[in-house]
Image (cartoon, rainbow, N blue to C red):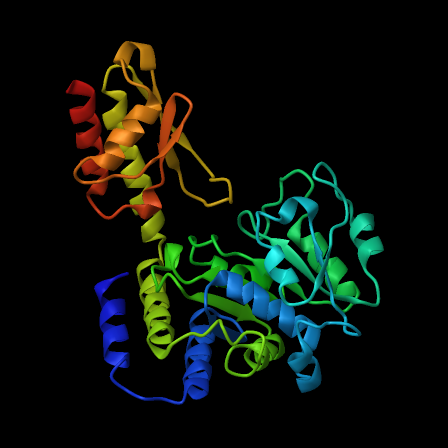
Length: 348
């Protein structure tokens, strides 16, 4: 987190406030910054998914809200691509919702989605693997197709965009594209408190999130967000947008991987290649370093272990004959430390 975020969190700790009023004021400010109708600070993107699912089922009905996770008699089915899981839709189940998965890993058609919609359908969930118009992924329909199907049946479409920062424009791109809500991690690219998340979207749906959230509802009570986190995320978003008018973060990431690629390629028996986008569609390069293990006399896994147990401790991903590095998790200048340590290990 930037020092400005830390200072704001410390300053906000020295006051008592009405949390609902703060939640609304912070939400209004973030909505304005991100060009959305509404915004809600939650306890991580996964809590955002949970609360949005509850909001889609219970709406503003206090009886329905108070009955969750008993969703009997409600519109409690949420449609999810078979291949769109990435491990998180089980969170939807915790609300009492039932997940319906049309199609297959290999192929899903618009007719599959249409036939899955019933009078019990509450929403369509969409896992983002890149910008709104990026859809070349087996078994997953384009976002626009899913939005059109959802709105044809008067259903909300919610986008899980937890890892989709950068670019900064994604904070409003999904909703401007037609999604009713999108959720993001407050940490990761935004560099806010790691335990926060953000929901942006249609004003009435955000109101339902507030109503079903930890302050208004029952089921989300364990997902509390403190005042320090609300303020911290607000300041983090202000900073992020101010420094990324021209995608400065993306340029910094690319500079880091370019430096490492050149430096590693100059070391005998190492070969570097850049890989982009990442498995969740992030629009910047990571670096993969291939080792000639026989010539070096060390395996990739041994190198990874030595980096981790050395001083400073450096954690990188290890694969078969290779290691990979994500530039988003580095501070300025740390790419130089990694290169230096790899050289020291290989020449020891």
